[in-house]
Image (cartoon, rainbow, N blue to C red; front, side, top):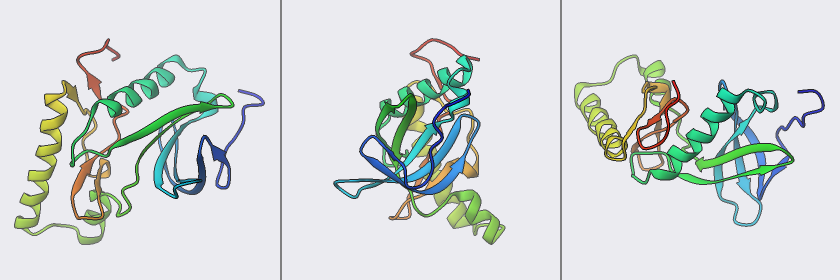
Amino acid sequence: MPGARQIDIGDKLGDYELVDHLGFGGAGKIFLAKHVESGERVAMKVLRPDAEADEDIHGRFIREIAVAQKLDDPHIVSYRDCGVEDGILYFNMEYVPWGSLADVLQKRSILPWKEACQCGDQICKGLHHLHESNIIHRDLKPANIFLSDDGRLKLGDFGLARDFESHRLT
């Protein structure tokens, strides 16, 4: 989309300043952002400007926000807020600073069986909350399981999730 605003570190969206890159996906970029008044750090997912015109990508992004808003569990990355500024759609999630289970496995190759069982238990608790909320994750993998400050695992990235209480997208 010609003339679409490109955003990067140092820019401001809503009440947040973008301070670092965390990653990217099919729909957009993920930044570490800081609330300008409170200093709270969040992971901000920003829809790419060229994806705004793609109905499927835009719809999936909106559905990801809707799914995240429904969830409240210690084993799920929590939703904070969302907004649109200068035509840029974004949403904020809890910042989980210790990387993903994929990062751990890349460094350690394998986990001792007790640790693997503890991970499995926490993942199942997060999945149980999703399923109780009539949501299927559909992209469960170590890269979408994040480590919190307290050592807890949290499921994240609901871009492919299906909410059985809303209309279908295949």
